[in-house]
Image 1 (cartoon, rainbow, N blue to C red):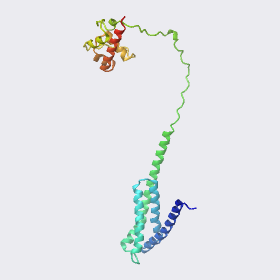
Image 2 (image 1 turned 30 degrees about the vertical axis):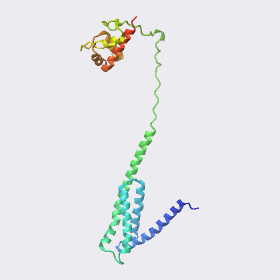
Image 3 (image 1 turned 180 degrees about the vertical axis):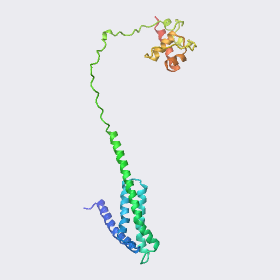
Length: 253
């Protein structure tokens, strides 16, 4: 049973066949009246260009050259059918015969260039597909070779001693600061000394906060000077200093 789709396809094939027969007859007559040596080849060239250009349009989406070639070949076919019906019987005028004679060499150049265009497009498509496949499936990484020697014995747990966390007295943290004031009062009214003398910090493996706290305890550097020394902002050093002041007051007996 014929479905609507099959009916449409069948009708398309029949129309193509009938149109091709009538168009072939008209174009052959124009070629014969234009004194082409082999008239039957001329419509084959024109209709062949239409078929090739149609497949090129489907293969290369958005190709201006393929669309131009399709439109030009279709226009030549339509013009030949109109000339066969409109011009009186007998030889064609010289200008029409010249145009008919120019179609085969122009078609040769056009279809050759179209072949090169399709080849470049196919090569670019294959290259893009290979890059996509390579990105989707990366090369396997070789496993690491086993160690030639066993790792050293870990450090005995019994010999590791915990750091001392005994609280300091407030007067030990920042000498010269009154010890009878609350932590908030001390943090707010503490005046930062102004000096540009920067001590040399030898231990670069320590945390910046530890180094900054040692500088607060042992020197009279300003927050800006300490921030430049440990590589942080002045606001961070100011926050650390207040925390150190509060911790020192809280740890007093």
